[in-house]
Length: 396
Image (cartoon, rainbow, N blue to C red):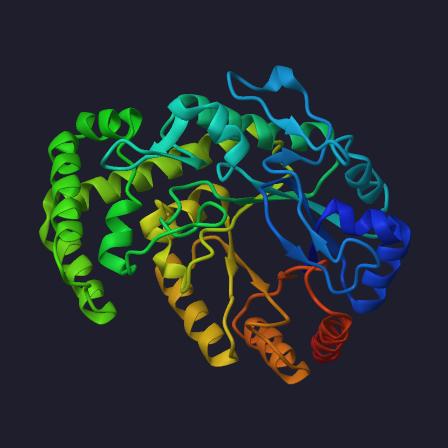
């Protein structure tokens, strides 16, 4: 049976009660809950909340009862309120609802700050404390342990993995401050990791990573010392020309893909065989841009079998274009799930939500998730219900 999933947080269930929420979801046509089992920090506007309209979750904590024996040097920190896993346990006891554990793996400021040796480091050696590096052995062991732990401890149906690779430069910390105008060329170079594990691993494959690191630092310094800001369209072409013409840069980016793919292979091998492992390849738009983060879409599909793509677009035409491109890259390998945002800034009307859902179904995507229960207004839930009723009516 295809999954129609609602993404949600533990605190949203606690406020109104798990049973009441599930009853509402089932009436909407939702048959799956994708619950955040590990998550980073944020400032969340909760339109439907009676208290805590603006909510700040604890940074980098888990929302299930963890087993420290399943981890190496880096161990998870349980959420002080919901870390007992009670919400996840109650969800899995309902036989009429499927449950996926949503795991934010390496985007974790709490663990990054405490484990600087395992974080991403730019060409200048500055650690990005919000991002554990997928090349670092301790970070890899943590990621594998997290997926193994939740799948062994709870009767979940699947896991949705987010943040398994190298994040873009802008997707990072809180209250970021910069008086330098951003552009794709600059951000792409600042986002590259040159930690000892990335450099050492790439060197073993024949990449002159140390020289590349020095050249990247020099190029950034020269740009910052200059008196011109690259226009957006020109910066994009400068970056693409560098990728196409710089052999070491090209090979380094390809190496990053092997790092992420091998980490996913370790996770898939560790997790219970009956648990579906889906990978959210990127929140960047379009999905094809995931390559920068080290996510090779075809390799991921071959490894886990499922790409869970974020179709975060404001029209069904753009959603269709992204889906066509993903399918072209996969060539029939694996399965595609889709995630939609039925609210600002994406799908801002009932018609837009219905059109987006039908576009995915027409394109062969029948497993659809909606992000996110706590973030959207009540009207969005009505739109979802109408869209799912329309799809169900077509298949009956």
